[in-house]
Length: 302
Image (cartoon, rainbow, N blue to C red):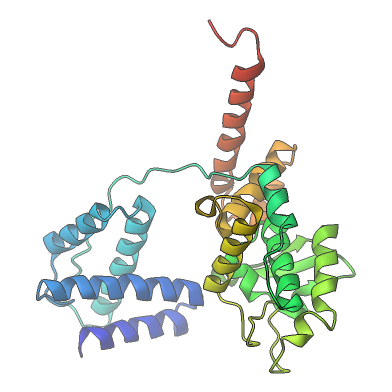
């Protein structure tokens, strides 16, 4: 069995036996494909790779400027792959045993200001399709209003929306579901998008249940979301390099904490399994507080 076949078997196992989400499987596929290409340049393969060669590969990733989190995720995919091969009797050992990605620095999220968010939500990109304009508005209101992940947003179906209780069910990591509230702007945008001029005009398959559709009536992808955000940033005059779906999530959490929300409420809203993950946002608000103190307090300087 060649490397590509082994990789396919592993990915199939992740889906069937481990129940991993499509986003996780896609990420593992990318990481292992990148490893395979690199090994090919050195006339090596999965079966001949040893620990020193793996260390060299990880070093090459760092040299490319990849973040510590990306290298860590890549090693996790490789470690999981070899664990599968060993369990299935397809490899005698794992070169990833004892290999570490190096110290991972925890970077603080960089939220947008409330003014920048207002400009993004108020701007409208030039499009000949009223339906797509309505869809884009719902998408951005959802990302900022609920703080949901982009993978959660594109997975929302019509049946997940409860207008009676003003709640939306989202499915997060590990297929865990949670309910998030919708504010008035999001509710109004949803009503407009679900009217005949909006989503119904995009539908080409009556059985399709996803909330967000593309111009061809298919499910909107993560790449499609990136394009929407990029175009809205251009229209709003916000630097495109500062905006992403994850930045909307960061901004939602940070702004709520700055306005007095309890950290456990934010944890539940974002779907964090551990409150320590949410606590990184308190560091952002502390930084904001410190700057405000330095700028305004007479005794902040010498």
